[in-house]
Structures are given as C-alpha cells and as structure tokens.
Length: 515
Image 1 (cartoon, rainbow, N blue to C red):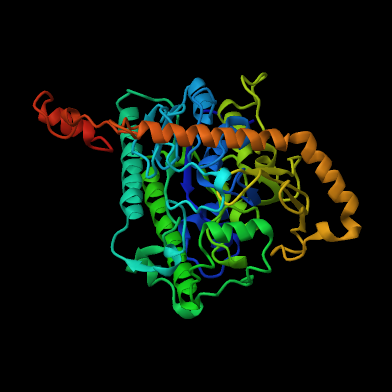
Image 2 (image 1 turned 120 degrees about the vertical axis):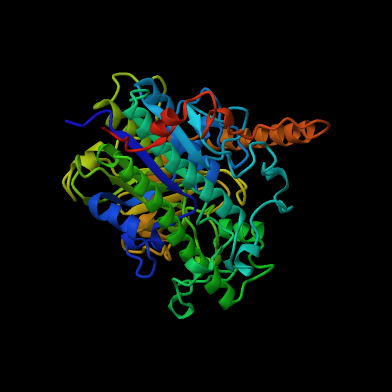
C-alpha cells in the first residue's frame, strides 16, 4: 500500500545530461548530494524527455501529454490554460502546489495549477522566440550560437547565477515557512514544491570555486567530432542554426566549455544540497518524496553538436531519480521511460491509486510498478516517445524507443534506427541495412498510426505565422508584459508595529521555544 499525502519535492536542472553525472557512471564530476539520493533511491537508467528543448519538454513533463497534443511546438509556444498539469491534479486532492524557478511558461497564464510561484522566470513569456520554418536559411539572431563555447571559462557572476541563487533562497525560505505554519496549525496540507534551476544550461561560465574542482588534463574531448560531411541531415541543420561550423571552437575552447559545464553540475549539486538541508532542518525530510530530473540533455560537442535539439542520446536522455526510502528500496530501472510518465506517477503516489476516470487523456504511464519492484523484477512498461518541432527542423521529427532499439523518423530525411544497447554512441544506422528492413517498415507503420505528420507540419507552420504576427503587433506602442511578477507584501515581513514584538519573534523562531 502506497503512503499517501506525502510531500513531493521536485529538483529540476536545465540541460543536465545523465552522461555527465557520477550516479550514471561519469568518473569525474563531483556531486555528493545527487550521489546520496541515487544510492538510496530508484534510478532510471533510460529516461527520456518528450522533446529535446526547454519549453516543449517542460510542458510535457507537467501535463503527461506529447507536445503536439497541446501545441507546445517550441520555446515560444503558448501553454494552454485548459491543459491540466500535475499541479492541478495534486491541488484537487488537497496538495499545496508551489513553483520556484524556471518553467518557461509562455502566455498570460503563468501558474498552470500552481497555487504559489516564488520567482519570476529567467526567460520571456512572449512569442518573440518563434521559429520560422518558412525561412529556414535565415538564422534567428536570438538563438544559440557558439559564443557559449568560445567564451567558456571562470567568472564571478552571471545572469544564471543571479537567478539560481534566488531559486535556492526562496525554496529554502518556503520550506521553513511551511514548517512554521504547520507548527502554528495554519496550513497542514501536504505540499508539492518544484525547484527548477537554469544551470548547467549554457553559457558555460562558472565561479572559480567550481572551475577549480576540475583540471584541464582530466577533461576528455568528445569521442566523435563528425565533420559536416559526415553528419546526418538534421545535424547539418543544427550546425547551421548554431553556427557551429562558421565559428568552430578550438580544442582548448571545447575543453574549457566541458570543464565549465562540469563545474556548473557541481554548483547545481550544491544548490540541491542546500535545499535538502533546509528540508531536513524543517523536519520535513522523512515524509517527502524527492524527484530529480532535467528538462533535456546536452551534446557537449559529441558528433560536432552542442546543446540539445536532437534525438541522439546526449540530447534527449535525462536523469531521473525517485528518492523515497521509506516506501521503495533503492534499485535501478533499465527499461525506457519518459517525462510523460511523471504525471500519472505523482497522482498515484498522492492518491494511493490511479483515478477511475481521468478528466483528460494522457500519453504517459505510471512508474509506480517500476518503483515498487526491484531491479529486473517488476511489471512496468518499456517505452519512450518523443517529438521535435522547433529550431533546426524543417518538418516534424518523432522518436520511438522500445527495448534495445530507437527509431527516429521525419518525412524530410532518411530514417534512423539504432541498437542503443549494443551501440550506445549511435554510430551505425541500422535503417540502411537490409536485415532490418522489416523492422523499419513496421516502425514506419506505427508512426503513421500515431501521427498525421503532414497535418502536424501544416499546423506548426500556421502556429508559427500567427505567433510571429502576434509578437510584431503587440510590441508596437505600449507593451503589456506576461512575465510573472512575484508579489511580496513588505508590510507583513520582519518587524512591524501591528504585531507585538515578542509575538512576532516567537512566530518566526523555528523550532519554537517551549517553556
């Protein structure tokens, strides 16, 4: 029997590939807090995002629906208010739902079921970053380029550090506030709190303290740095969009970027550690399920690619750790799962069972069978599905991962089939082999059943055109911002004359003094 009404703390990083984490076998990165959670928790070795890009991934993570089902095509796609998220479901069964940090919401609704939002977002909430498939050759000036790699190195402050330090501070403060409120009998509801950092997302710049954790000579270069001629068609387009070959980095710049990235991972681990410390100090740890993940991966120069936007393993694999040692023994799950599975999982953990009837359709499945089982002994599913519909594409790209195989299909390019178990670096495209022709044909038929790709392509184009015009129109004259404005009522903070001094100090002190 699942323990219900447990608190849920979701620790999310941005662009953190599992292949750079000690918990997933990396021998260099220093992440003691993540290591501890992994040792005591359930580690999913083959977890995928539903789209290798920030906003579509996050919207699918929240809703349990593929990007195409909610119009979440790219980083400037509106997240429809009527789309149900796990925050709605948990709130409906008595949870206090709180968000601190990045979630990349676009549009007027900046809450999407969260009762409280502690910070603004680091990214804009408007349609200014809408791609243009009608004019692929014109590279968007606001998108990734190679400056993040070329300028990599130590720093004192960055925009990201300012943001993430605020996320950590507000999360810790909220945990202490929750503890104090519970002690005072004011709000005893269980909580679901999401703390979402923007590191280790590029640019690759990190304070000296974290830079010095690693040495130049220990930083391995990418295993394969494919030339432009060697790249598949989609990778060639990504290299154009990111100006990879226009401004190619030197070996030292590549090494610096990877070193700064590892430093950023250690910084993230420290931030997670500070939040976990507050959880413990507030007396909330024992009754809290902790989930660790990232929105997508990072290629780090492998195959000549940086950032994400690809269904190669580095771009679409994510860490996924569920820590609840009171309920689930620590073990590893080899089967493939995805972010789409988190909503039904969280709902089942909160309720103790799946709802008899969902108010909306889902594309994911609960991970509870995986959590309950031990390694290799469970009845959980083995499937991950993904879509990419944004920059660097000229048509929808879909991915199916099942068993040892991954299939990538787009009407614009030749099919790709990889045996990920035997060929983890995905160097041999089996779709070109006659021995796999029957398997490829079956997978193409499955894609045709799941998606009307021609209709989806047309809808992406229509959506892009609408949003580009919308942004052009609404940036004329007075601009009305959708960006979230955190409200802080200073009249109710610290010492104020409408509250007796001794009463105020007693309320703020935790644990409370008893005489």
